[in-house]
Length: 379
Image (cartoon, rainbow, N blue to C red; front, top):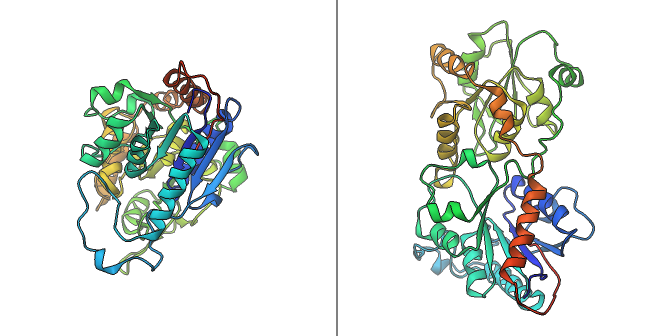
């Protein structure tokens, strides 16, 4: 292991956003050193530089049917989040990464995200960087990962940091706002509407329905749309309906789309949850914005929504509005948002700055070593 050694980057395969930021960093970092990505589903990565190696490992989170049932109810220690006993796939995944540690002699290992793999790296004497998330992260598992890390990588702006983040964690954090998300040239509203075949003159409210669970409920949306008959309400993503709805004619469900940025650009106002990708797409576009956070582990979206509310970047409701007056109250707040402040929080050079930070960190950590093994990133 040396300052010129490989960087390992593990990527959680259940979130496309994890893969997109890993790919964006890897494509830049590979110009400076070798990169290897570890993931259970390599197909989730966008286009990668041909020099970036991708290694498939078994999933750490999905059962295969060969797990030991007698150990299924054994309690986990506080220092881990997902470490069931008797799972051969987990044994194989950890063995593959540990063997890579021995063979590649990496300069660094990045986890996006796994508290257990962060601790494995530390126990194997490999310095690691943990990707930071919003949420209630003061549990022993997260603290073990963050405290033992040589650095933390936050895929959001410093202004969006939680007020309760520990000072020693902030000191070793690199903030890379919007890394992995296409927030460069923003489409003009008229250009986006022409591409999508939307009326250039009618007000459009875009609802970005969440991908978690059964989808966002459409009943609250019928209330909002019915109260604004002159506006066109459009949903993209997964929506669930209920028997008692009476859908108005100005509510249009488009389902899953491949071009969400175009829909955001075409909108006058936006309603959404606050997953990392959605947050940065809306911030980059600059829109009056209503946020309704979804359930996630460790209250990730609720904590992120609190930050957006604190900074005056979104009008936040902890639950879906149940009457038209509740919608109007939220829209009054949303119309007061400074959309230019939303836009300035996006760093269009975040992938380059993150790659430079990782490379500099490797060199600083291994200063004084003589050998020069290759560099790898594991996703």
